[in-house]
Image 1 (cartoon, rainbow, N blue to C red):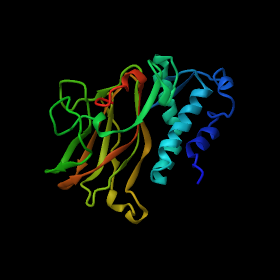
Image 2: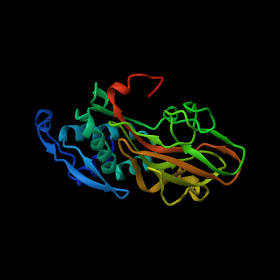
Image 3: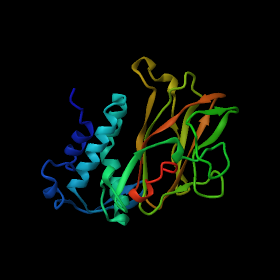
Image 4: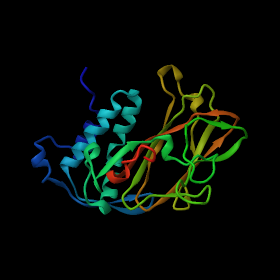
Length: 255
């Protein structure tokens, strides 16, 4: 069966994907521009159409075997994800080369538990699993600083990295979470519901898309708090990508 190219379709519609020889696309550029994001202006770097094609094809390739709804969510937000790549590239200036990247060239990973601070552990302790025991109700940190010495602080992106959160997947038989709140640069956003119990489980994976993708740009800070309305076992995990330079993706222990 032919691979579905949902991301390619979205990028083509946005004028960001072109067919052609690599040598030609390397010298054809998407020009620098400014965008507004959460009330602040960010610059998207000039980047080649070859880099845009590499990004597009790699996203489609790694998602084709997943739940079609996950693929659709990523495709719907393909431009936002590529915008984040271009924000990171403004400082790295080496472009996006994906799996074949090296040095300051950019690549991405889908979110992994080990890239996040364990909210129930000591500072600078990586998660070993998305599964989490909830022994009391109330607000608890879900995404916070992994690098610092103070618990429950916002995580700050480096100059050449960015994250994009698209939604949440929860395979737990009984959910404990029903809402979240994102804070960026100390400013809280409106709460968003995560009522996984209303999602039709007979359709497959229990997934809730954010109303808008949340991009955490280079040198900006953010965190996520979740509200747990009952005790139990939480298995909520985010859907999204972490954009980094290739030289920072060469250790299996610390991706």
